[in-house]
Image (tube, rainbow, N blue to C red; front, top):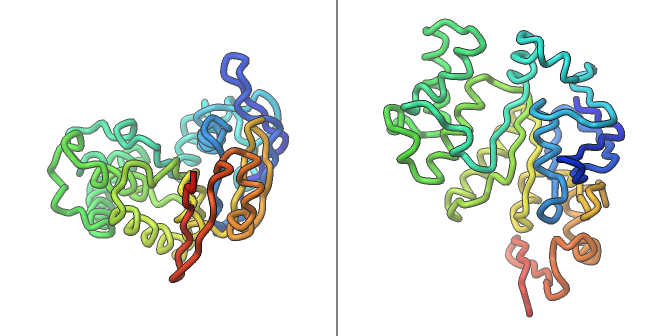
Length: 260
């Protein structure tokens, strides 16, 4: 589904991605892990066609994605209908005067008539259990409610793939648990999931495979999530955990403890 070959990218001569090659199949659940500033968010933007590589190639469903192709409005719409991007900060994503219009925005952009738009909005409101927010202003919602609305906005276009940037950030434990179960449900219904996360305790639940970035903006490891979590030395090498961290497993849960 996604094929990245020797992708490099820099922000004003500051390296963000360094010769990244990655292959992601349809239906996979992949976590991008690594220290702050290693390039995870940059890669998600590139997959979504927001930025373009300085060198290397990006293919989605066998077709190369380039700046020139995305200048074609029809091509851009088709790509963004297939890939749903959920930003780290929900406020970046929400801009309409009420929740209904937020969720309706995608289908309207795709040219759906209002009957179809209304059906999609209602389906998403029900799926995320946020019908009571329908006429509310997004600005006044809680962090968890905003995250649910942002997800509904993306799902209303029925994408094949969801790309999530630190989706657990700022959520209380109950909402984090809801999101984990919801993402598992989406994957069981055939959605491909790519998630950038620092959450070492929940990452194994939302991904079968993890791609670990190092501080040189390259890939340090690409393997099943459980194997990466077991390799504490590797996690220390890339500064994802420090020398005082120890892993503790019990009652089916994994906990990372700071014993400093």
